[in-house]
Length: 149
Image (cartoon, rainbow, N blue to C red; front, side, top):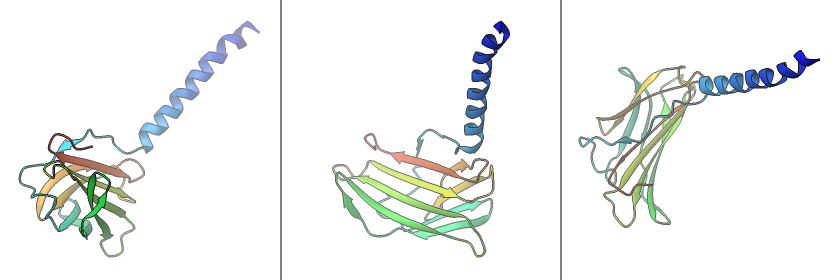
C-alpha cells in the first residue's frame, strides 16, 4: 500500500508532462512579435500579400479597404490557396487611429506542410518568416512604431 501512495504523485507528474509535450508538438510556434522591416511600405497603402514556401506561392491575397474598429483601423486580406492546395489563411493590418505610424501585420495559416518554414511577402518585399507546427498551423505578428497593441 505504501508503494501505491508513492506512485500516485509520479503518475500525476507523468500525465502532466505528457500533456505538456503533446501541446508543444501540436501548438503553433510562438514567435515573439517581430519588427516589420523598413523595406516594407506603409501598411496603410500596401495592396498584395503572399505566403511562400521557398519559391512557391502557397497563399495570396489583396488587402481590402480600411475599416474603423474603435481605436484601430483594420485592413483584411483573405488568403487564397494555390490551385489544388488545402492550405487556408488570413492576413490583417492594424493601424493605430491616433498615430498611423504604429502598424501591425498579422498572418495565420492552417493546413500547410508540418514544420514548414514560410515567408510573408508584402508588395514583393520580404516582411518575415515563420514556422508551422506538427499540424501545419502557424502565425506571425510583425509591427512598427511604439504603441501597437
